[in-house]
Length: 198
Image (tube, rainbow, N blue to C red; front, side, top):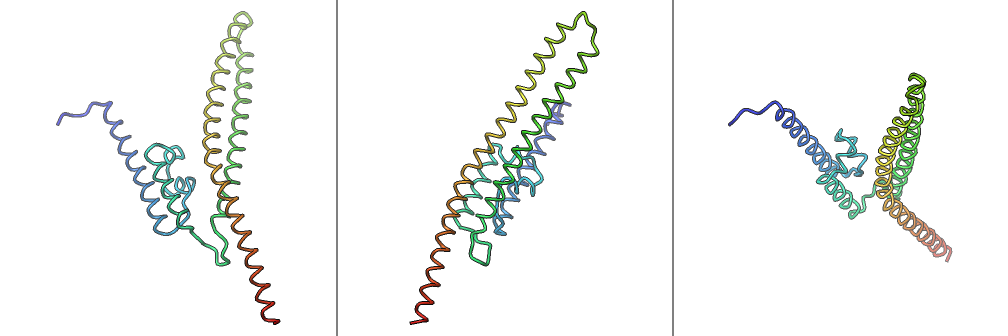
């Protein structure tokens, strides 16, 4: 077996780290399924101590979604009063996602403001003679950087919104089921009371 080149050593290390992180995600999913704990992309990311990017990556996202679907099919119930636990958790996740989207937008605005400030400082420091050329160069660079950052942020927001759409739909369905169950319960109580009076 030939010795590895210096370039191959960090590549091998990255591969080992990647395999370890993937295994942590799979182990976390299995543990959460075994314990009946509600699985979400955010919770798997937190418990496995991996990046959000990894749980959405090809080869991992499918496993997480399959575990979520498996739980949904089993209609996990966690409250003693008979309400579906997933209804409240879906609303909470939806609120957290909206908050994260707002935070991302704020961050994007702060980055743009910081870049404009830096551009102004650089313009103050250069001489008058090449000023027009430098302005053109910096403006093009800023626009390109802003476009790249905004494109990345927009892509992330679109992915999060796409994930939220089925959650909203599930939340509405769960609320409708809950309302129907309450109506049915009130009717049963009225029927029971009327039977007792008779």
